[in-house]
Image 1 (cartoon, rainbow, N blue to C red):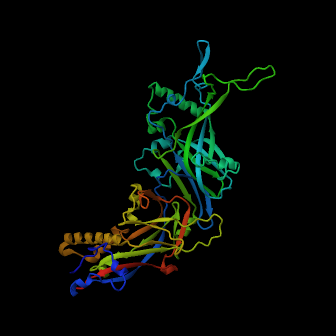
Image 2 (tube, one colour):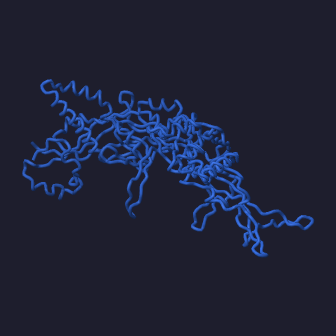
Length: 533
């Protein structure tokens, strides 16, 4: 039995290597001597370098806002814009009661409706967050702007460039809606509120920044909706019509403070209306206040609040990250490499496919191991960044489509690993043999086709040079910090449902770099099966 093509038995597990010496040849002694199988291990060098991420595809429901300066990587600022969703066929009349009116039922005074009048009493923008990075007591200020008409024109761009973190959000900045000074941890909130729970034991307090907007904004939306109910426009048919014609969305940025990044979960546009307190007959209650003449007070009136339009996954939310020039200096360090999030640095590895093919073309790959080891972080900084929890190893040429098309790792050309911080500080990929074989076969098929077409004029050396020039990323993979979303399928198993770029602050300094400038090569460990000629 001969195997001349690399990868014919790809995926065959060498389980006999793990057995004790009484069973490690189980079944093999049944083969004729000419077919005896031998397993070997060979190592190859891998060179790595840091590459600037520049911008990453970020389709996320989380908005990041703030500024943070790290002594190693410099500062980066985060801001975001978001549209607000409108439910289909939205009508204020469906959610508001009738205006209050008294009437007599015989001799009995009764009332119907509770709304004081058909006017907006106030409008607020609520920015909800439940987590942050950095100093919780750092003084910051947030500014909120309405998006302008240019956003309306570009939101329909089929290329969806606004999904990338080099978004120029400033060009979409319209009128200022409000400013708010804050600290991530609001010390003015008493513990009785901060730790209050509902009947199920869930916390009811949600950290929120509240912006009181001009009431005219709410009145305008209400008037347009009344016209919609009369059939005079289609602005509330769905979210797109609402955004294009009524309220474009908001741009949220930090314009003061350094050291805190908020993770914003949701943005709501809340309307306020005035309502009557009524008794069991629907009659407006009076305040229990007597003046000097014994007269009772005015009607008891309260302000009812309801979020009517909110940021959701159905509408666009886009994040902008801007790094300082110091990040470029870290990319250019040659003694090691880095991974840095968000939208910071990736590590690129050049895999020795040609060498593997030259030496093992008649053998079968069983396992190919690649490990990235990070240096221990000895920073004494109070709010230092930790190593990213998860990383994606993927062909460089596939990065764009992988994230834009919301793909997940296929364990063929893309793999994930979790940081092992307890023991070895490593990102370990135990078997990327399918990647190695797929790439080698890709070039092999291209060579065979070219050779057939060239016939007698075939020049191996010239073709190889041309192939390398036309496919510069063929043997390059990127190590990228990611977040992984899973779904539980049973009590003990789960499946990956989404992989996205990690947009929270983190970094790892990895062994590798340029050996000629103080770095070191990584080792690719290949286990293969040989069949004698």
